[in-house]
Image (tube, rainbow, N blue to C red; front, side, top):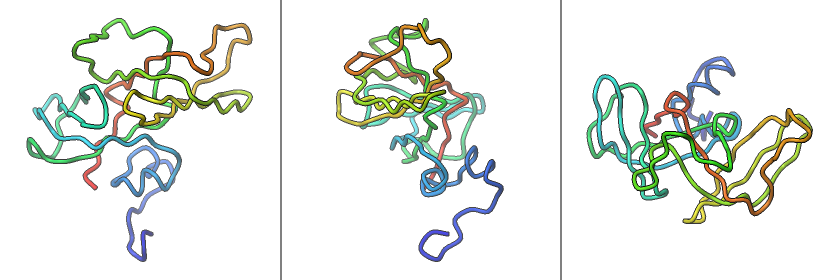
Length: 159
């Protein structure tokens, strides 16, 4: 329910994994949201640009929408991959689904940590990672990191 209106009906898993709006995505769990414009849309993929970040986004499926239309992309923190090194396919001049920032805060929860990464434009992105190896070279406060979002992890929302 959103101000007396039924926003979405479904199981907790359906609403969490397949929200139909920014409200539903934010109501159940934590999410990172990006306001975007559709720049490409075919049956096999769709592309997006955002004034909020210095990167393009891409999903591996077509969407219901017109070029230039405003949409929101959502991604859950546990689906944001964080590393000190960029992914192999990283293109610094034209990054796609890859963001860069600095670790500003870490919420250590034993088995996992949530990293709060501040981008150059001051937007904060959350990434959750498992604490599997006690001796691993974990990211820490002030580290420059790369965040990448796999195409299948991005959720396209129209409102």
